[in-house]
Image 1 (cartoon, helix red, strand yellow):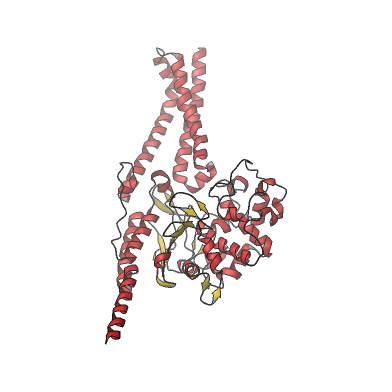
Image 2 (cartoon, rainbow, N blue to C red; image 1 turned 90 degrees about the vertical axis):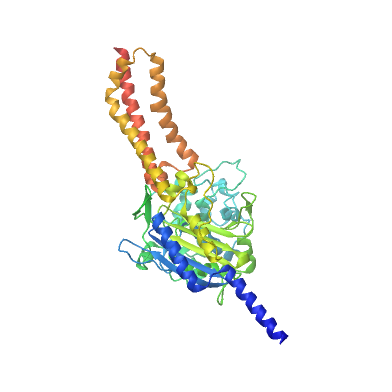
Length: 496
């Protein structure tokens, strides 16, 4: 009798502990669907795919919304561009080569990429530094050397272009996130194995894990029903057909589904094994999630993963897609979220992004908590505290005010000569100073300062945030052109 009671108590404890992490399936389906559909409508998200892994098994997967303009439904098998979630996949491939003694983490990358050997800049960069973004390659380095819209370029062509880049020799290899690091890792995979990056990844990673909806070329993804991306223009999603860069695939160009990325998580959480396939050794998995470089007191970067005390995560974001994986190892829980739109504009202006809020809400639901527990903030200008429609209203008002001010400048430019006559009581120095400040110093400072502050050139700004970038570029041009016009009028007036 005592043994029977003991067994019953243990069974109850197990049931309670499981219920504390993942809610009962029927309740979870209903509550999750209601919450996600409400948030998607509020944030104007066209499509979303979600997968949840618990203790090495897929416990929830579903799609929401539409994959394209024909209202094709999203499912857990719908491919999405996963952006920088490509980096953890590339890191796994590199660790496979380390295990096979084909490369060593602390070797110079020039050892394996012949095209870099003539440039001493790359001799001091190790494979480990590429993995941890401590190579000193600058943010957006890929656009410093590669043609901006060359979708047919190869990884080897990118290597040829970046081989002419010279870095500051005094750099101390501190952390700076750069996509070029992982493109070069893709080049190492090609150089060492003799296979293309895509062929190696298929043979050694995606096929052994039955990742049937993971693609490295856009055409194959299109045939598999890839979700069409939507750009966010002034808070509203607009269908886009942006080029897919073949040379950038190792860093942020892989296309995959929520179900496939859940398989990837299962492999990592099972110490490198997926079903009967050994993808990585347990030691290699440990290194992926190790704290290789400290970013803050609470955050580090491993090999393709951000590492905190209780989680591993990485996100991905392009101009028209978003993705996120978060792993909570102590609870054996992993979350995969894929979107076919991006909130980059709102995030850039207001630090307002729905991805983290949705992630927090979904995780709360898995723990049987209320989803809406994300704090709204305290400061007046912390727009996270306001409802999405309020944020968008502020956004639209600011844009209208800016455009209205620019149109006023344009309309008053032809009247500048008349205003000089009425202002003749003012000193000539004040008139010239006003002209210099408002029509030369301000726009030129913005034209130079914005790329410097963001680390992005104007073509990249216009590519990733066309609405904000377009308004800013238009404003700069208007002020400069009207300034030149007023300068000519002022010069003629002063001669008279």
